[in-house]
Amino acid sequence: MQFKLTALVFAALAAVAVAAPKPQQGTNCREVFFPADCGGQVRCDGAGSISICCDTCF
Image 1 (cartoon, rainbow, N blue to C red):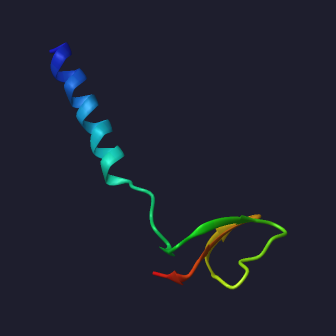
Image 2 (image 1 turned 60 degrees about the vertical axis):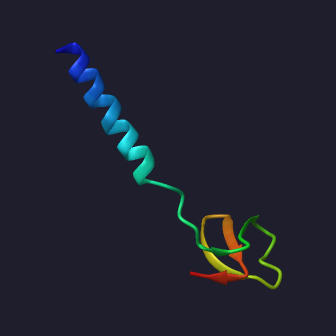
Image 3 (image 1 turned 45 degrees about the horizontal axis):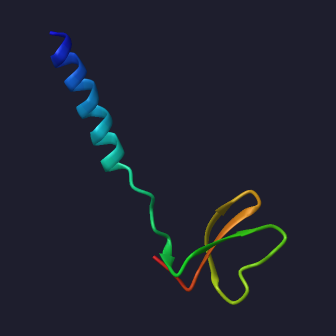
């Protein structure tokens, strides 16, 4: 019984780790911190003082 419970918990954690990859916002992306700007790239995403700047957004 203990083995089945351990196997079930491990399988559930593995499924969550595989199902939640980091999303890609665009092509050739980089993180930019305030007060810098995107410098010719497009701001695809961001929060607070961090912007995600890319050549193109998806």
